[in-house]
Image 1 (cartoon, protein in one colour):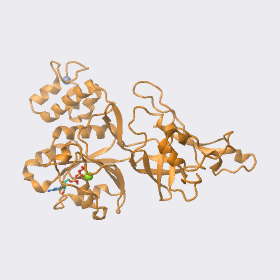
Image 2 (tube, protein in one colour):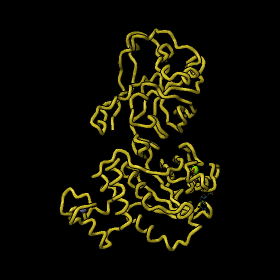
Image 3 (cartoon, rainbow, N blue to C red):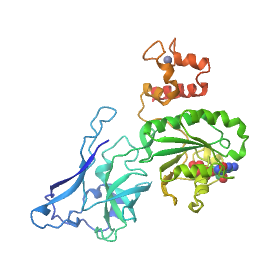
Image 4 (cartoon, rainbow, N blue to C red):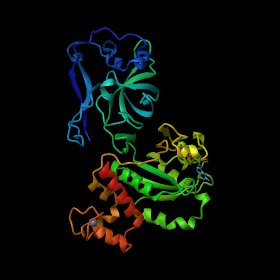
Length: 390
Ligand SMILES: Nc1nc2c(ncn2[C@@H]2O[C@H](COP(=O)(O)OP(=O)(O)OP(=O)(O)O)[C@@H](O)[C@H]2O)c(=O)[nH]1
Ligand SMILES: [Mg+2]
Ligand SMILES: [Zn+2]
């Protein structure tokens, strides 16, 4: 991760340029590139002798990590901290990012054109949870006093990301979280173990603690699910039975969310928003009957919204996802998402064994002898092949 530092640099030469024209956001919607004509004369820097001919900017101290294809990534642009404010992205809708400034106010921001041009692999360069620097501006004068709008000039390096592949591009669902609650329903829709394994792999990849929430516990005979709960708990994934209807597991989950940054993820209709409403009833998030529509990709929750919790911490409620493909994963990496394979891997005859077609594969033998779970092995093969093809 790139470290950042504050530095003093010479003022730009074009400081006395013509201010940008009025109603620039309207024009922006018509023609993207206008954001680049930044209003140099409105920055809150006043020339007072030699010292003030410099400005303080935030820039990366260490070079960013190379792209997976070996190409040099573009540097995040430096920002002038006299003209910009820090904030956190609450939600992104189309081209508008709602940012909560450190002053507590919300700003509707667009992303500086230069930033958007940096990444071609990412579906959106700014995502919910991002820490950003933005330049507040009002629609009419461009001045920052009383501004409710702004332009995002820089995105801070992320930690804890939940990412997936979406039509050949990277889709960062959320950034800067410590944990992810994967909600699956035991019925309506039915439990899909292979989807759980993909979810858990994405958490390992994004360096986030996973919590598994088996919801709609009021609709099933719990006896049948104890082995599954035991299995995932043993893998180091806290696994809870919950019901938004009768309140089972809700107190336990609330304690796990306190003072943490959490994202809720899972298929549409499993009850993510319902659980959050049970945890904090004032939220009043929209929920809807599971129907044909959910299965066809119509979701009740349509944007990833960052929601502060009144007992400390915040959560992001996300729209349901139907498919979960891992982004930027090499076939040989998949084995690492199945930590229980580890003791057997060294016993395979070939050091580069993929545990799929090879003879004398210890992983396959362990599955045959029931030392390893056959469903998990099937998930492994599915993910390995998917990554190999994709
Ligand atoms: N019986 C029962 N029904 C539940 C439970 N949790 C949610 N539901 C129902 O499941 C349906 C879908 O719930 P939502 O909370 O909208 O699901 P979601 O995961 O947020 O769905 P998307 O926003 O589309 O991703 C609603 O009709 C809820 O009332 C539960 O614990 N038990
Ligand atoms: Mg929802
Ligand atoms: Zn093997």
